[in-house]
Image (tube, rainbow, N blue to C red; front, side):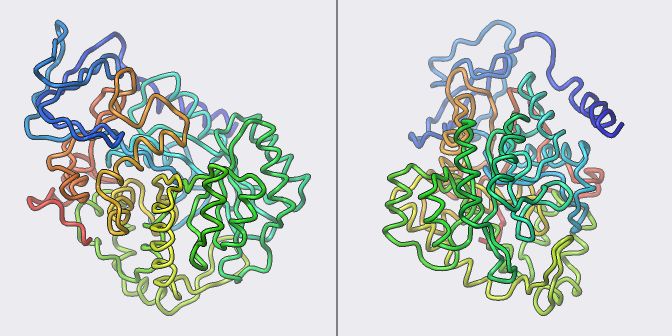
Length: 474
């Protein structure tokens, strides 16, 4: 009965997602930043037909098809839709995390919010109920109006250890159970296999043994699936590279990465899939500096804003121990996290300099990390760490599409999906200009943006768009 209800909800959510018949829309007089790292193309036009890019080039070469809808966007900038390679969806109600909130409606609300921020594709890493895979399947048969999904299904968590979502991920204890989990997830059609190897700064007595991780990676590769690992320690990261891991979902954070590790990653083509710089920033802030920024507050529930502004919350995170739902331990969440942030930024710089393949991912969705919003913050932190705005955009679009092995997204090129972010100001001048969102297109269709929608309340109840964008704190 529960699955039947989920199925009915899915049909309702996706009904009417794609319009019948063909249509062509032209965006003209724009500057195109195509995501590949190529120089921006001013005075350009993009022709979108049936959701895909039919032509892109100088306006002088435009041949408008008959009956095309033409949008004159003089002075605006167009980049590919952002791809966030590390998220979790449908886990939260205000600031409370629980599997009971992972419903089709809540997941759909998160995906809608990602799209509103210009994040047109997300990779969900290991906390999905099965209906999310069905959502993904429905998307791939249509033209979605919310963020596209790639999913690792239910990831591998060691029994008694760290990771996953209680009530969704079933812990394992042996290599044989690890192989069985991979086989089950492969049968469901997941895109990746996720595993967690961490002991939360030695606050948990159990961490995934190498024999289990090796079995998971080996079985995944037999099923032609790539593997992504949550890690914290350099020694664990090196061991996983030796075992054949394909990518990491977080940076090494316990110490500086060394030449041996960087050389190992490059030699084996291992990706830093999602540096999650914004995650470490969130954990280092007792008081978040964007609590009065409409770009943030429009995308979270009123209950979230109230909780984040409360003195009780500030006192708890600074001084108190926190027990997370379903976990047998307490920890001081913000203890020494500023050091972890700095180590993360330094290791990110080292990986980029060494030429390790790096994507863009936020770990948004759980408590303290916010769908859509954090993607913009993540790109800002990349620039803070020394990358150019062009590099940050490329990592969040073209490079993430390369990791996903999806040739239909990630850049503004002929025959690809027209997933586009239209901006009022040039992000190459200031990466913070990605918050000047004028429009978002999913498969060629305009969808509500964060400046025309509001999470869980009427748009009229939200603060207006400031005239002085961008106004992020860094």
